[in-house]
Image 1 (cartoon, one colour):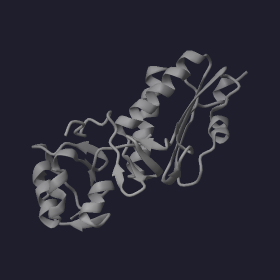
Image 2: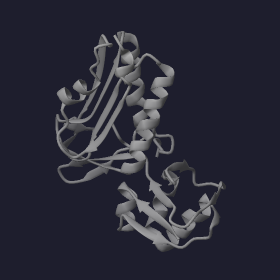
Image 3: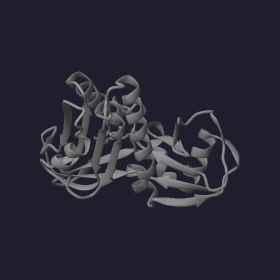
Image 4: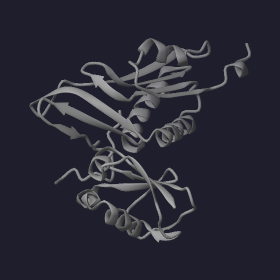
Length: 155
Length: 83
């Protein structure tokens, strides 16, 4: 067995088409890994009693990809046994219940991939320049992640 | 001459997504913000909620001295909400 043929890879994609869980999990599958952990962020239909019609995402694309690459680098430093990492984020209009982000990580044993997926989504919400607009019936609202250190959560 | 990029709420307030601005080569982040607000006064309302990304590195709106090269990218970054 020559594991050097299965070089660890990062698969990062920002796209406006519907995301596929099958596609993202297949990207990270490796014969040397017994675990693939997955996170799917989906869109809820309500916020503070208001009905959400759909979400719209925009991104500073070049910097978002760079920041996600940094997250992948950090994952590999913290959990060296992690094999492949895939982060797919949707841009543009995302209908209710559809996925806005899918993160998949493979590792030989489950502990590392589970921790790494959690770290990826938490850090993405704190540092990747992507913005979400919630569209309600008669208004809209730019959302602010509580992880974002430059947002004023108390106003 | 730097490229200024506007996103999310800042793009709505400024009314555009990008433009070229002439600014001093050496300028603090806060001074750069003030230059931009001079051109787009409606941005003043979000001053406490935004930071910059200069050449894709986050910079707070403070006294940090920026040394800008022609063609550098400066982005206005409102509070993020990815994921």
